[in-house]
Length: 281
Length: 348
Image (cartoon, rainbow over all chains, first blue to last red; front, side):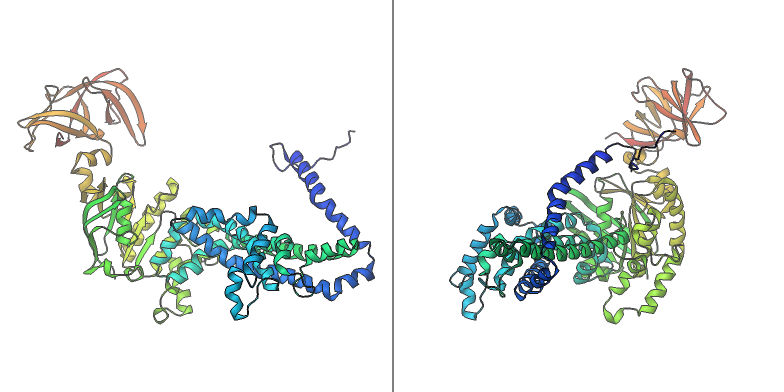
């Protein structure tokens, strides 16, 4: 009797599954899974009492709240503004269109510190924009509002670039069909054109949100970093590290990780169910 | 409900390309008209001008007595079925069909119960009852086609326009839907215009066929009319098959290379002309005064017909000849052909 050698059931007659999966798992382990596991182990080394103390300290809670609510707010603003921007870029032709199209990618390319310093300079009370707002007693730089501005800046391209291809492929005839059926422009846009774009908009929203939660470089220059007011969670982690409180830093990091993962998973599930329902016509 | 559509010398150009060069056409209320032509002939452009999706540069389109330029897209009340159906994929079948009714201003909008009733009536009409909750992605091509038609009919259109209604379907479904659409038209009686490049479809379905070529209307008439009495050489060759013979007309006879091939002409042409002969109008004869000698070079099956390709001296293209089933010449056989009917046009 020959022993049956265990084999993965090949999903296709074409070879390559084993190799591709092997490379994927190895790379993912080296780059993502092992470092994250290390993070969990480090956090666990603090012991339950310490973990609870760090997790519930007012400063940690304030930082997490600012990071997550700020990221959600920034991603929402980006979803609306990014959608309009993508719409304009796809639907209309105007001089300078290529220039604006290229400029959308700048937040991807610019070192975040540069972005942070520029934003801080412009939005400071004596800056170009900050100076305009100062008479109305609106302060942007060195406040939570400044944090949002930085987060909006770095998240914008994610929304625009995920929506753009979907808008481009939207068939022109559905818009004409809606108009001939007597739909107002408003109804055409909101019930015919936007629903098919929604899954892409959600993806863009999640990407912008994920990026904003983890953003560090640009925020710290404009935030002012006042503990309990404008101190973001990633900065708190760095501060803990500088104080050689590695376990404390790991605890904050782990909380961020779990919250982010839960949120992203939720949105992905919503999307998957939408896809099952509407398919691609 | 159905209105007459009057198209008055409509002109339309895209950049420098003239898509329509002065097209006029009268369509009676309740008539089913096919716009037939090769691709690039302007047939879809004409349909879109009637719908108001394109603006004509010159000329106008009237619905009854009303100039359509005075009407908004909603006021035109046009049922338009797009080539790729343009169903809203995020809406269920019921929502798709109800879209037009729900888009009406509040005062004219039927209440939800009425809308529901109308949707199920329409699904009954298109023979797809009970599909309300499905999404377009869950339907076959033929079903989508009919849903698109139901959506167009839901607004009680004054004119029904269909752009290549069967273009994206396979041959069998196409045939079934064609017969079904004919019946539906008889029952509902909408003024209907449809675009097609398929002559068989146009001839079988339409009350009248309008043939477009290079942005001009070449001929309008009943299917029998345009098939039996083509007005131009283009239509001779576009509708069905036709052999082309360059001839010279003297008196009442047409000569091909000094050999009389067709007599009894009443047209007063004289001089060089083009003679178009359909394969079924060439008969193999033993001997006749007006006969064309040739050699059978190839035999082939063309659906129910058998067809011979006959080489004739002085013609670069072989003649297609339909064979009566009992006569079967061999390849290489010398035969004589008699032209029983032909269409003659003065040489351009």
